[in-house]
Amino acid sequence: MNIMNVDRSLVKYAMQAPYLARDEELDLATRWRDGDDRDARNRIATAHMRLVISMASRFRGFGLPLSDLVQEGYVGLLEAAARFEPERNVRFSTYASWWIRAAMQDYILRNWSIVRGGTSSSQKALFFNLRRLRARIARGDRELTSRAVHEEIAAALGVSIADVQNMDARLSAPDASLQAPAIAGEDGGREQIEMLESEDPLPDEQVSGMIDGERRHRWLHQALGHLNRREERIIRARRLADESLTLEELGSELGISKERVRQIESRAMQKLRDALEIIAPGMAAA
Image 1 (cartoon, one colour):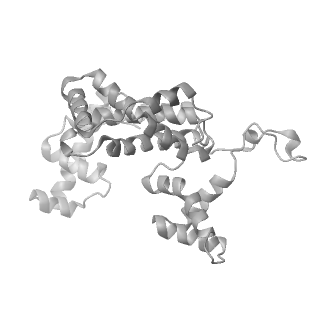
Image 2 (cartoon, rainbow, N blue to C red; image 1 turned 135 degrees about the vertical axis):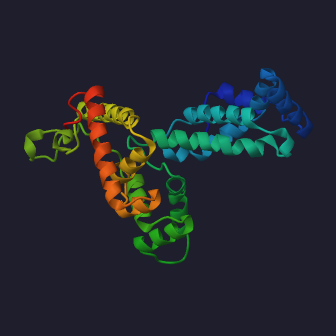
Image 3 (cartoon, one colour; image 1 turned 30 degrees about the vertical axis):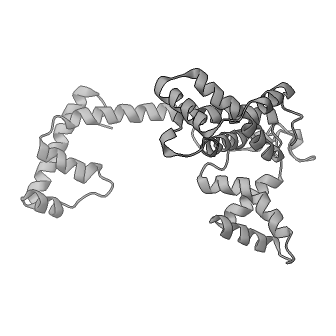
């Protein structure tokens, strides 16, 4: 195991911690869960630190400090200790392995690249298994094209070929700084970030739009309170629904003619305008 980046005193401490017998483990877990016994929790965690260190070494190929992986794994270990249910008759190490691995994988996904990726379960599986599967396929006797390799990986993990190709490209290429100069001889030495253009509104415009939208929604909700139940039903079905109902459909639902529905809708719209003039002068005209 490569432990050069891990504090040797921590490794020594972890390796010297005694193993727990099944009955002792069950007793400590029960004391921690039922009595909030911190000493019991710490003894469980200490006894399984070697598991954390061992699992961290499996992820060293992602180029992140082993000491950071161990720290994240320890957080997962404590989470496992807090959630462990002794009555399920499962060894703590078996249960804790999932939490330790999940904590380390989440840390890797957050820090491996400045571009966040692999947020879905299928994408995570692709991120952590692509290299292994590609190496296994390469060890075979067959001569496969890159496309064929991607097809096999996609089939094994249940993802699309495009996802495999995109992830393979991400894992193969380093991040590029936006402060790096543009291609030599082009654009007079401008930085890459100056070459990016976005048609999206500026951040202050987006926030302003969100605030205005929330304010308008609140005003409209207050104005709807001035309508009776039948008027509100018609306005919501005709003006606020994603797929509005026809006058005939509403008439059938309410037991009135479609012309009567039109009259009620017209009257309700005027009541809304009058209410909005009081609640938010100027909005009704908009």
